[in-house]
Image (cartoon, rainbow, N blue to C red; front, side, top):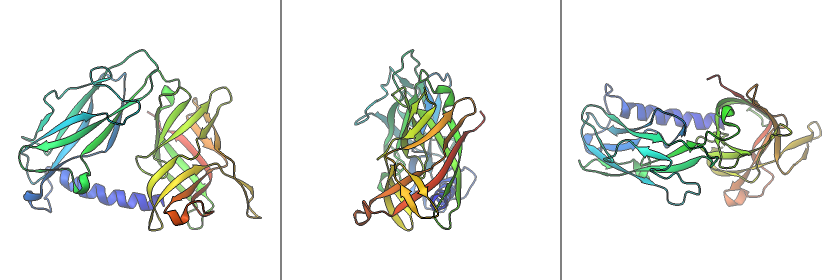
Length: 302
């Protein structure tokens, strides 16, 4: 299943690469030119002194044009407030494409000494003064979600990119290897795991510092995962084999593992289960899209 996701992403990236490169020929007419974010999600630690540069490209045969953007926090529970948690260096809220097909929105975080959790806001492309479109079909590429990580979090040194390896009992897919990231959460005993089975989607991990254990909190969902030609919503459940040879299964309410900040390893020795929540005809069925019987995440060297 992960390979299906990667194949789709690879195709999209090839298309975007053609749109973002100054030297490449373009396969569309300039009357269809549009502005779009190169990524829909990015993050920066609040203690960083160098700004986060969020790329916005124009899909056109040559530079030229202008696009406006705004900050949006509507509906965000732990929102980052402009002037308190971050500053926009591009104070005019306009990007002008005089010499390049890519320009950048510059975000400078504001540090504090409080454990107030990671905070989020959105950047939205809103209008073009040169007649070019804003975003792709259905508004794709018009919004980028920016998270400012809290550097007072007790797991701050553990945050980063991890190499994930897991095995499954499903036929034809003996193992998966890919990257995930772990970042801050507003609660001191939790962190955000991004990329498990679905690009750019988040799950919450809860840590027990006294016992060195970690769990993937149950009933969290991944939305629109491409599996066997279906677009599924998957919920995380606990999971453990009682007797593989007899095909017996014990389902535990949550998935438990261990973590070690010194070695940079998180391990779920008994795996985890992702159960279908959509389409409706499969909801609650025993069939599960992801039955992983082992999972280990190792932090990459910085």
